[in-house]
Image (cartoon, rainbow, N blue to C red):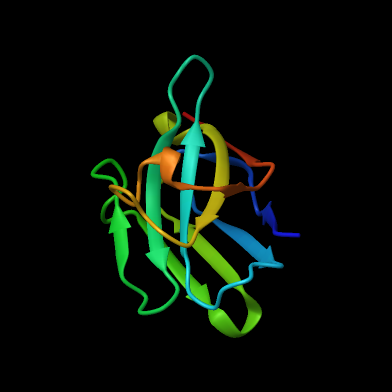
Length: 125
């Protein structure tokens, strides 16, 4: 059974930093795409960053470029999202998701078959 477990959310003041962790277990393939998405109340789910475990190629949403960094530790089947310069508009539930194949952009949520339960990030002004 594939399981994704996020951790590391919390509350920070504007300009602060957080690191989210996604632990992946049970994925039957050695190479896959993993992405972070976020969803704020009343808004659509937004792709934030993705990474391909095979070669480490990353993709970022324009809204987070230069502030967020996605990275991986393949030995531990773990992916991280380092978030710096946090803004109130970054407040959302953050989810990690995994898939073997992409149909379109790696930041499109309909590509992803497996999802974690989410971790809340709140940025206060």
